[in-house]
Length: 563
Image (cartoon, rainbow, N blue to C red; front, side, top):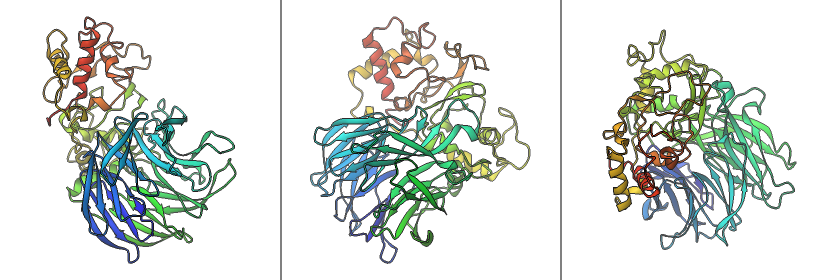
């Protein structure tokens, strides 16, 4: 979401609708809803112009929209997964984060060309420009903040947080002070309990020029007494420098905070606002008298009085065009409210945001388990590394477990996992399953130029009897859906099951590190080498580096066609 320089227009990208909505704030009416492509994310006005640049995540494009006419004026193709986009003050340059492969690119909006690119980290999402001289970017899975010097076009500084920092989507810079604020999640992976595993935080980074260049974090679930919030998404600072607003998408809450210039407490609670469903963006008017909250699953923007902290208006910006049961399921998936959970700390999306994984390996009751993406889940049952579920409805057990602590969606007894079906016993559970099963595989960006000679070499090795990868990773989804012992798990003293694990699909494997059930393989090459000493996971010990690299390049292009 962004506001025009004159404060008269608001634009918001609608991820589920694939559109950009332009709102006239004078009379709070929708001027245009423009189709831009699948899953638009960041949007920014280009300088003080009427043109908006939109990062269309699933189309690998930056789309330019004229807010006066509602027409698309141009596009720029990028490698993969553009997430955030910002403009310099003059509107002569744009910068974009590409979540995969972790690049920042610079775009000339006049010529619609990419002028520079920089590999700046891993899975970059958050992006902010500081005085047109440098950029701040966040690593999504680690919360690491990096500063990019725009003159030298290089990473100049880096601020690491805790190893538990996770899911840092956005970053906001204070207008005057050398500080940046980022909402993030703390994932305590050695705890399989909802009230001790996921924590919401506001991270604060002291930038160059501050008296103390470090970073700290403020725990949001205890910020207002014992009032628990979940899944922080975005932060905004009012132009008058007095207020900080932070939205929590899991519990549909917002905190309004007074900003303190003390380098210690940093912020002070000023008010609690109950938002609509799944708030994902907040912006403040130039006069600081109003602020705007985007409710992603209500498809609305709420207008608030900043002094009274009361809602003044609700603007409908889009509609859900799919199956209404899938929308119900998505609301449940993102909710940290009862009946999904009891203590509001955690939702399904805390570990599987938008169908992806959280990049973490968790200590589960049965042993170490690497979080898997749920893309293509409907076609790759059974579920979990332990193959302990044969339908998504069996997640009723997770909802009722200590991990989420909810009362569940079925009224009464739930059938055993792998037993009689739980499908059909609850409309809400059926809806949750429909949403969970709705995530398709995306084609690999590594296959955009076709299959190279090296990839073809790797494909032949993969399917050869000599190597044997396809003995288990077979069929169009590259899984035989069976359990196998591949030599892993024996060094885990917490492992409670036989060391046999379900064959995972290899579609989309290029972006789902770490690998194996316990996350012990950091790279695809490690899967074939360091974690496969006895050839139990493909016969690879006799392969040379050229062969290994060829197989890795083949794995990276999966899927190169729709299965």
